[in-house]
Length: 479
Ligand SMILES: [Zn+2]
Image (cartoon, rainbow, N blue to C red):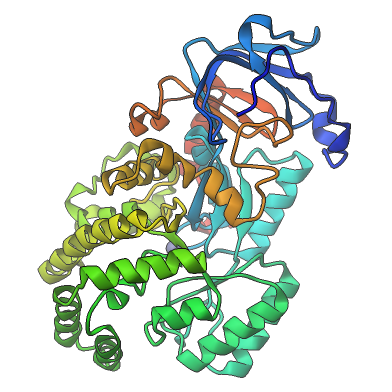
C-alpha cells in the first residue's frame, strides 16, 4: 500500500489516447470521501480525488489536497467511493429488449444503479456496435459495452445462428469475428463435434468462448477446449454428481423427443448423487484452469419465485407496454407447472450450495444478472446478485470484487478499470453508506462518475424520468 504524504498529481501526458470529447472538460475534484479502492489495501477515509481527461489524476488525504483553481469540486463528506460496477451478463439489445427502445430506457437505468459497464451475452450486434461507437464519440451517455452479438444455437429454430455441423460452426465464428463480435457465446444444445470445431475456430480467430456448457460435453472437456466463463453454473450439477457422465447422456436422450417425466427423473437423480468430495475436487480443478463463473443467482431466484411478480412493479415503467403485456404475471405463472416450480426452487438452493463450494476453492467469479429476462430488471438485479453472493459465503469486499476488479481482469483491462488508482479511467460510484459494512448499501447511489463526467443524483433522476417516458411512448408499430 502506497501512502501519499502530500498531493500527488500526475499530469497524464502518458495517456495520449484520451478522447476529444473530454478534453475541454474542467478537472473534477471529489473531496473528503472514503475511498474503497479495490487495490488490496484498507479503505481510505478523508481522502480526495482529482479527475482530469477521463482519468484519475491524483489521490491523497483531504486535509492537504490542493485542487486546481479551475476544478469543479464536489463535497463528498460522509460518502463512500467505489469503482464503477460491471454487470457481466446482460441482454440489453436482445430477448425482450428491442434495441429500438432499450437504448433510451435501459442504459439510463443501468447508470442510475452505478453500472458503468456491461458484458452483453446475446443481442443485436449492429446495435451494440453503434451504441459503443456513439458512447466513445460522446454522443451517447451509457455504460461501456463488451459484447458477443448473437448467441450460437445448436438447434434449428429462432433467429440466432445455428451451428449444426463443424463446417458451419467455423463459418459462423469467422463471420462474427469479421462483423465485430468481441467473444463467442454458446448455448447448451450444441453437438459435441460442433462444439469442438467452434472452440477450435474461436481460438484461431482469437475470440474467447463463453456461455452455457453444452449438455453433450463434459465440464472437464469444455474447460480443456478453452471455455472461459461458465454462465448460470451450467454443467456443474453433472460434474458434481457421482454418476454425472451417465446422467448427462440420459438427459440428452430424455430431451429428444422431449419427455417431461424422464427429464424430471434425471434431474432428481443428478441432485441425489451430489458428491461433496467430488465437488471440492472439481472446484480445485476450475481454480487451476482459471475458469470464470458467472452464477447469475438473481436470475435463478427470480425464476424460483414467480409469486413475487407484480403487475404494478414500478420497474415495469422502464419497459414498453408491449413487453409489459408479455410479462403479465398471471399468464407467466400459468405457464409454470407445479413440478417446474419445485424444480426451480430446488435449483436455486443447489446453486447457492455450488457457489459456496466454488468460493471455498477460490474459483474466479463474475457478477451478472441476466437482465432482461422477465422481471430481471437491469441495475437493481446486479445489486441483488452481490447480496446473494454474500449469502453464499462471500465477504462484502469479495462480492464487490466480482463487479469491479474481476471483470477488469477477465477482460484484460485491469490497466484501465476495476480499481481506484492514478491512471485508471474515471468510472466511479459515490455511495451514501459503506458497502463493506453491508453490501446492500450498493443500492444507495448518490452520484456516479462516467468516463470522468460527474452525474449527480438529481441528474440521474432526470435521466430516469426520460427513460420512463421513452418506454411509455414506444410501440412496435412505430419502428
Ligand atoms: Zn443470458
